[in-house]
Length: 593
Image (cartoon, rainbow, N blue to C red; front, side):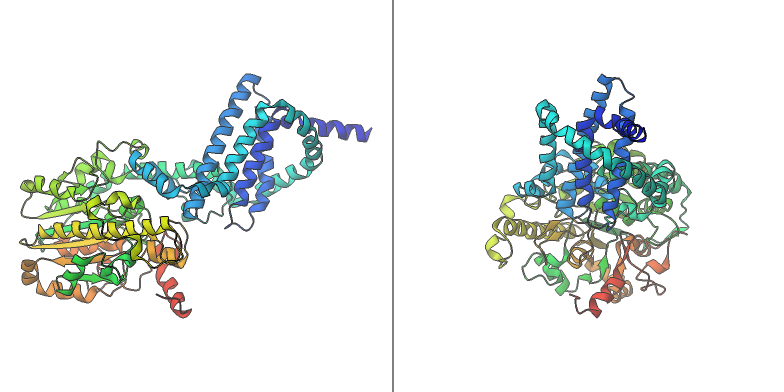
């Protein structure tokens, strides 16, 4: 009697799986593959028990649906699972990290042209031999299994027999693991549904909170992006409350050039052996350009880097970036004519998903009106065209101007950043036996983009040669370009070569002859500050010093020209890694470059 009751219980236990057999089997294999390729989580294999439990519960709910609706839900669920898993795994293969909030923001902020460039740059036939190929193979097997019922009749009875004996063990274990994993339940059921700011760990590569499936990582990333979108929409209120006590307009013309994906270790200005930046290098040798040698960025993604760069809140402050005034709104309130010339962000022609959720600081129309007096209306194939935009808007300038040039710089794909007639370097210029022909071509394209950008910057400087102007240049982040590794593009990893290429950025200040003559003491202070450790999130406070802008938002400890500058303040990368502590470790191990 007991044996018969047990057999009947096990039979009932298998009903949800029998009704959704093929779906359960292939979703289990897909989930297990995603778990296996999560190498930073040493306990990831325990997630298999939670996966079995969650799939079983999902199939149990499916059995409650009418057959036709059940099939439709299974089809949609399978398509979503394969698509998100492919995206997650592709990102991991290309960048060393899975789907995260910053990564998703970068994807949503991409135009059709940029998406095409990225696909061409990163995807290759070799990816078929990576976990991406396994997912594609699994998807094709799933389709074949559904189409050919003979396979099901042969294999499923054996699978039922196995599951009949392991499910009674795996389901209770999965339940126990879910209940005891407090952080997993807390983040998944509480924080995800509230306005509480998610921990930084969820935004990084090291996701250790139990989000072991790509669909969960997508879910939490969308929640975080939506929360950031709401944060952006609070900025007008923050700007309205910002106050400017006075402004002396110390620098009548302040120009800020924001580069893109600029690996300073590929600039001859910083010692690179090839002449990639000959013009700025000459200006430095002539004493017109002050080169800062210890500058980092807290982010290696454009959106996050720019948000922190424009906010007067520094990394480590009690306020987040959207809770503090923006340098652009303060400068405009002080009386500067603020002009924004971007080859990446314009208000109307740029149509992408990220603009639709209104979460981009520079794509929000209300914020744009508060920040800028003028901005350009078109994105151009090459950065040189921004000079024409500037010339056409020059007549609108006043006696006090804050002008921002936002370049496309060295954004992938590098070959598309350079006019064909401006190519200088060839693969034959490099002795890199560790790189193949394609990689050497990409390397030469990157260095050509660097050299072309140097010529664009020099043309910007020439327009202020006869003005009392000061020009600041830095890049939002760097870019991997085969330094110490066979990789290029972006990565969420913290390998030494990744840190040096992506987070160590260029920063220099150029002054016109008339500016140097009238502000000798200020230029002397800039010269002394060039060796100080600095981070791009503190730049607004330097700009306020140059403008003579007095406001409660100003922090002397974040201004390298102020006597109270705090050079020992930690410079955090992605909110997790203390760059200066990392540098000391590198020196102690004899690995510093």
